[in-house]
Image 1: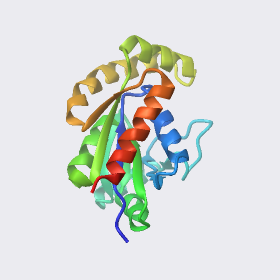
Image 2: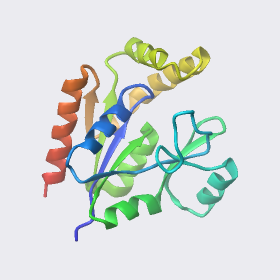
Image 3: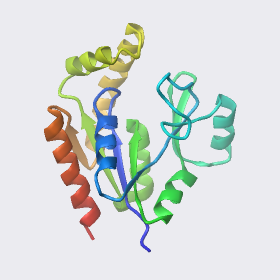
Image 4: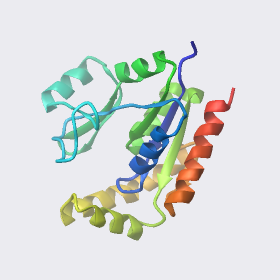
Length: 190
């Protein structure tokens, strides 16, 4: 059995990567979601082992020291995210394709590690103002947190050229159809 390929979706917070990934997982592409680990507490709608592997800061640090992460980053002061190597190989060993919803630096690092076995897609918001509107509309973060996310997003947009493809997230049906085609073409490529 062939090992699965890797499809990486990275974007600034609020650009739409999670919506795209959830859509792709409902299609018949043989995809399985790579659940990231984080040292932050779960939001009220999140479940351990489904949305993230929620680790204490100490547990996260021990896994970093044991080289158990494919990539990891302290995304915000005191809050780290990472991709566990065992999670990726568990999925690939079943012959399934791994789909990632990761931050920009994590996406670049996974692409570097796996090279041509991975497709790295940068999901770009149509504008910073639209990104701000989406984050405010979510009602999950305070305004000061949103402003920090916007500042981070402006920086993350400079990394877009490091990805294989830039997918502008505008009208949802068009964006999802484009994502479907990207994934189909990549999986079928020999």
